[in-house]
Image (cartoon, rainbow, N blue to C red; front, top):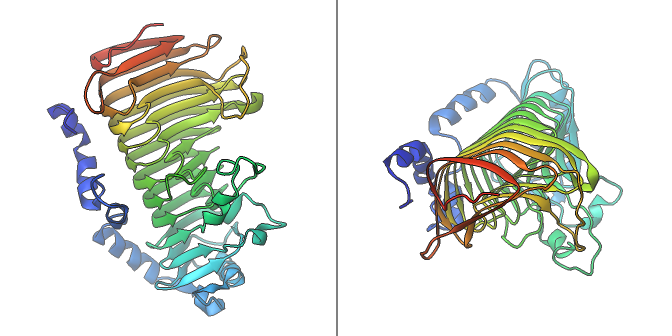
Length: 428
């Protein structure tokens, strides 16, 4: 953080305090970084009073063994049905010091009352790919169509992803590309809270919010090897009004990915790395129309990631990404710290130039400091037909890691600057 002045330091002080309390500096081990993920003692006490005053539905009472090898799927389904149909509200408990093996499972609403799911133990995925035969391979554990749901407890979702990764076309290019499960999916949930959980080695995405409204997320620790394919940390699609804070994410893909149909997204106090950074997109694949707006990423530290804060869109798409702010962010040896790529092409074949594009406008970068692992620290590669508009750089200080000046490049970009901006912004 040697590049920050006093004003910048004051702006990012809350995040520094978070980092110190969570032990998440990059000089520490992953175990140390994740050891601090969780709620404060007061928060835990307050929540424990709330859930302990309710009737408790314990998965153990429905036959769950928790020995890590017995199939506990049906026990969880039965416990969920009992909790969901209960009035008044109850707490569904997954006890501590146990490992519960689950096959693909969907826990659906609507429910009769507000439910708390208290996960204290470890939920582990079946290591057998064939257990997904005849099911939706995109999901492992899914909560669907539920209003007033809270999931917390300090426990762990372990996706047993190693076998899935070995069978990925991104690892073995001779294999056909097939989808793999998301560890935890929330689909069409309203007034949802997800707090104080850990995720490890998901088969693909770790936790996904799809078509949800009014969501609060905090204190998640997410980790998978840097080499693991498509293991996004938090994925947001078609979701409105989601607030994410105090999360430590270390994966093989985007730490946070925000895609079409999402608006009013706020992410604060995020530690990211390794991984692919914090991304909006990709948007507009196969000529689709997609919209993302009103996104704020405020106070984050990215270390050793292949991108920093990124907007990526395919040629030929339609729609927009607009009203987006990235501020108070520290980069530590990050490739492409600031990047807009309207010519994104994740394909084995080259992508042909097209006239239509997802329009990018109203993007502000403020108080972004640190080091770039590549010479080009600021890269705006925008569409000829739909140039990027209203791009603002304010108080940017990005040096080349190891010393020396960094550079900026831009194509078809309408931008302005204020304060000190290093590297100097280019002009189209």
